[in-house]
Image 1: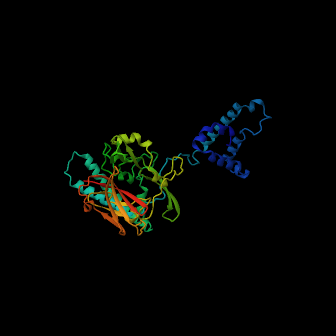
Image 2: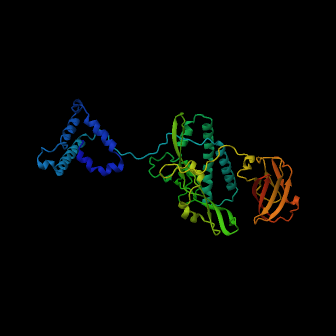
Length: 433
């Protein structure tokens, strides 16, 4: 009807549900209707008559009572009452107005073209199934039955994903069966609502490591919450720092919430398309005083631990901006020789933890005709061994302390120093046993 007074009453609702543009479109449509269209039906003439009750732009010449807000609201009430009568008379002649139930539709899909990964996961899954089949039967152990059911479903999914991934890798067209399968990734297609995205029943749910609960079912209708398991584990302990002070550092590796990942690539029809999925999160942190965190302790501190800096290359902050890039990951293949390349006056020593011997990589060290010296120091700076070379061998030096009479070399950290002319290179080796 185009009553401006009504719009002011809807101000909060319009801002909440963001439908001002819809109202503006309807206003434009009705304000620009031709007279012939208004007179084309009794219904249109009735609506046009009600529009004459809208408050005029200039109300200065109207009686005082007609300038008041109360009068405008009274007219709006008259319009709505008459419209209700019109609606009652025509309700069977027009399409019913409905608010649609939210449904999910996934018009495009993208499976990472890594068929070898899905094949490898399938082999792991088959091995688990084989091991479960060897377990003694127990009618009372419903959890085993549940897990067997879930791993069997996983096997079907991995095999299907491998097939689809090979097709995408080879730019082959997906079959209707493949497309139907991908459409059931989040929801299985039998329901019409997907309002609650925390609860899903599609096949992706079956790929998660799930615990048995009272809602176990032997049918395909297994669904639930897709929150990943957040775990932590200690991976290395350093009792002392580099100055031999007791610190009890414990390195931990942990997983956290899933992150959304958005990529742009070509869809099945070759058109650039934006795809969104989820990726795991990884954390590293160190505790002191030999503290080995449990999963519960990790959850309590998870929000305080930053993600590794290398993830800033692809991660965005909460405002959608990319975080500062502290380091970039090399994308070319790295050889052993490159790992052992001398840089910043250091030498490559491998293995860095040795029992009998280790190798000093000298590929990139500038060669000259001068003498070379190799010295071995303890962590306290005591000179343990010294050798001279008139000409350095090319490539590498294999060093076995026993060959030089160091048969009783104790376990510990040793500094290896190589002197060539005025240049000094150093590295660290750790003796065990």
